[in-house]
Amino acid sequence: MSNTSPAFGTPPVPAQPLLATRAASDAPPPVRTGHCQCGRISYQVVGVPDDPHLCSCVHETRISGGPAVLWVGFPLDSLIWTGTGGEPKWYATYPTLRRGFCPNCGTHLVSVADGSTMVMVTGFSLTDQSGIEPLGHSHRENAAPWMHITLAPSPTS
Image (cartoon, rainbow, N blue to C red; front, side, top):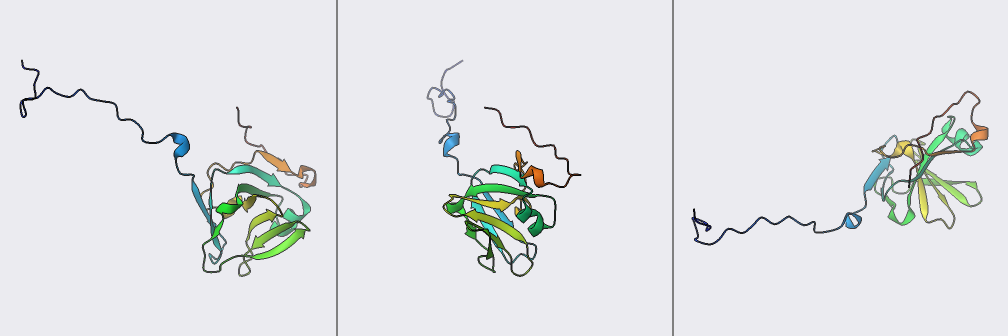
């Protein structure tokens, strides 16, 4: 038996492993989208969700009408308003904290602290809610006494 390729009369080339062209760390960061109830205000953020947590401060419970709001952080410089309604209407609940909401349907969408490099988005305004399980609960002492929450396990190093 010959050690040449029958079609070309040359020795066969041994199979080489296909090498990755870029490292996993070079992969583009994930893009997430979100919107209000009526769809006029929509947004895009880029990056891995940061600090997903519930908040039961008096501002959150009053604004949402519920016992807590789920917040998820993304880099502020990745936030782009994509809907026909443009940017949301803003309301300051603290001297250094603004919250954005849709002036049409009232959906609470984002929170930005002065000087922060993060924007916090309401978890359920996101189109894809995977990977945003809350790891903490701020202002837990203000939570409704009947509210019992089992938080996701802390990430391991």
